[in-house]
Image (cartoon, helix red, strand yellow):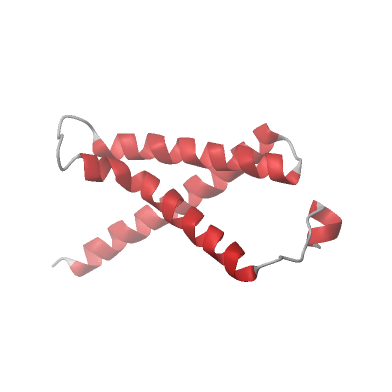
Length: 106
């Protein structure tokens, strides 16, 4: 399916290197929404949650464009798809966290 539908090579020369790249990308992408919270430790004059949403949205769009380039698909469509899926997942995670917080607190 990878070869036929996406035109990608299914063999990897080094699976450990591919795993390392995936891990690094996951860590970098995972830090982006947290950056404003780290900055807020030193500067408290901005809306941390709003800045986190903006940075996360931009990162989803950038990842979508990169995905479009790699898959040789429309960069605009790919970025919008990635944004919708990512923000949907972020919304579910936020709601789950709020529900968990309400259950945990008396």
